[in-house]
Length: 181
Image (tube, rainbow, N blue to C red; front, side, top):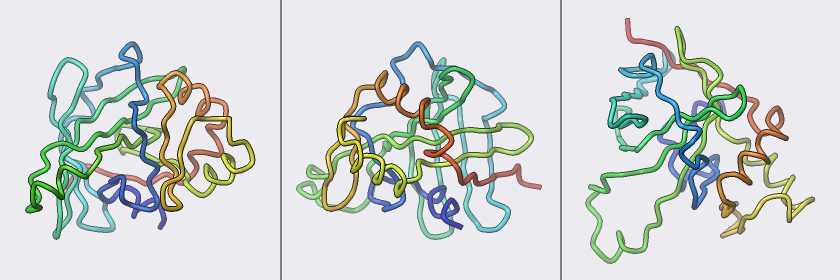
């Protein structure tokens, strides 16, 4: 159940997500999988993820449900044998005033991708595990704690090394999206 909330508009403000000031990729790790393109749905809710090709190795992703939507620049990357999605919010069209919008900081969110076809299986970082890990080992990965939320500040290569070393603990609750019938 935790991952259903994580998959639902994984915005940095969501307590279950771990925002990062930097992407997880440097550029060399980016890959493109045509199988990711198109509409994916959560069979147990009205959540929809629609991936459209936006460049040689990028996607435009719209995540929506009946009440809300968000648009992201999505990048698929491969680190070792593992795939990840890096999501970065774009198109800040919400009806907020200019001063409010100027004080919002867009952040990256990462998902582990276990499978793309025939089902899309993804997991977000386990924020509770990460917080415990960084409290016990504060120099393991550059970060700040802002209002009791971890904000990653590490560079991409350091994050790749950290999450590769701790992969099984950091990503453990996979959610599944399917193609609409």
